[in-house]
Image (cartoon, rainbow, N blue to C red; front, side, top):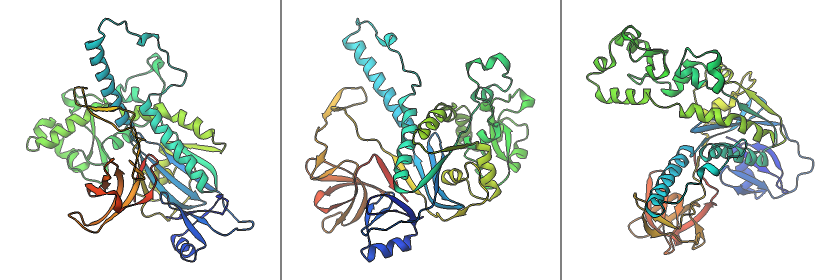
Length: 423
């Protein structure tokens, strides 16, 4: 994956290869400007630099979105952005429940006010807006680090009504016309492109009725699964309880997943046009492509199914030269909380939260490297830090949480920006 380069005036230049970046850093002609994404800034002025047009390609998703930067036919940078929309939804639900419980205990006779409030035009739930804002934030970051001439977005459509009711038609679409998404493609996404019964991947998968049609099963999406040909033939028209009588754990997983709500599809539907208009506000031309075209481009080149490769195949694509081996994994973590105190599961306060964000020069969310030279925790730890007033910090590493690391051993790698990074 290439390294972003800025000139002395912080204007973006063409990304360079890692070997070239190492030479510039070792000779003193450049310095590290940012760790994530890795960016260098030149120390000498370049007269009339030559740059080429790059394009940011985006594959929006409910849980994970893909990013790719393409220059001509070369994919020079890739990343996957993991959203926290469902976490926000659960937090808001918990807060709402605690507030209603407290209201019933303390002010049960107060008149309700929620019917007096109206939502502005174009309003989206906070859990949905976080997805849009995450993508918008990273698009603007990449525009500052790379000479971008255009943006490509996958404008996918999920017909949730037709997925639930295949016989829907005519006037029944008055509540929303989201037509055009193939049932098979949705099932592949829902079952993670694996056989529901044996977990096989990389083979031809078929649509399978959980409750056979010969025994009254319907074509509703909650009665459909994806299975490989051997499993589909072995099950035939048996009841799933009989077919999986010796595998109760698999039976429980399939039955629970089959009736999973269409939350992911609804998230993509609700945010696709908001995201499109926000990308247009950057002033760059925005190209849109369908999900079917993305899949056609990827399958034609025999590329694996990943979010960042899906992003690279959005829009008009002839051939791609993949230079990225390990994409950057970006996880949205938020910017902390405004809670004055922490509560137990019943909503009662248990401990106070400090209003001071910085302790010993660090704040929670900074990415640090701690080289511990003595004590019981000798070693090197890299990860996000959680600070305390006492100076004894916790560090979240790839292998888990390490507690009780002194601030004296910590060195900055990347300042807090609301995201965590892995490669």
